[in-house]
Length: 420
Image (cartoon, rainbow, N blue to C red):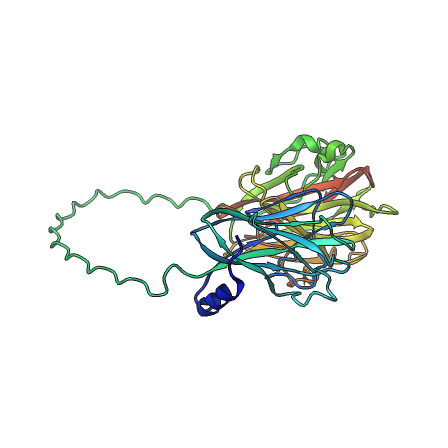
């Protein structure tokens, strides 16, 4: 049941400097949803770069749940973050741990907590699973958003008990004299996994298999190979969105294993009509079709990846899209309408020692690199960094479409280089 607000407000003011907290952010472990939620690429007040997710208010109730495991039986202050986007509801339902429901405002112009934590209440909760669910039920206006939730609680003890005096260690026994080993030839160091390579692809009038790459889910794009000094991947059939790279979907991938830090450059990347690789391909209304570079966790069943691709994003033609996918939740952005007028760009992806990615690009045929920028941090892709689950990842080429608008077309790449 809900605790006495006055008493526990005083309690949290006492512990505010040393309180513990659990924060769950949209798109990460502990989140799930019903219905259709999309990354809020235009949110104006993200939580540490996380712009959250949004859904349309329709006649169907859709929910977004933030779940965690509470460590102890105690009182918890439950807060929610509103990243804010235009036309959000003034009456958003929040169900807290199954014990209370709070209706809160998310409209940018009227919510005083935009870009800050809003306290939903203070509750006496038991250790174990607990959740906050945001719902469209009863909402007005166009959208409902979900960005982050936190549980704040006082520490178990503000004065830790003194540790017992350690027992004295016995005197160590003397080590035996080492026995000299026979002289041997030194074992050579293993070769680097990031051996520099350049794939310029072979010239032939027929589509030949590519060499030096590992393919995953190749049946999604069977007409893929090398022809006339370039990599070509023909998108003829997209039944069931089998070519799509989005959230849990994984189309065809052709690439190599690299370890952080690394650097690759893909040259002359773009999409073209089938059989006309030098022509720019656009759809007159709206289509989602791209070719470019993907970085994927070593386990292809893992829903953690990133990509930088050239093509058309809805009505935004000749653009570069960037995306992070963490645990199956994607955050997407692009550099804008007709930002690459020729429809061809060189892409550089640098995997840093801290496992972040720095992305830059340049119009094909030029020499000056520009940092990828979609309104966030220059050089960074939107959303939380994927969980690579180790230091080795797959890096390679993808071509994909959503639905059938714009088909047929092909993805083209003139050169793929592992710099380091």
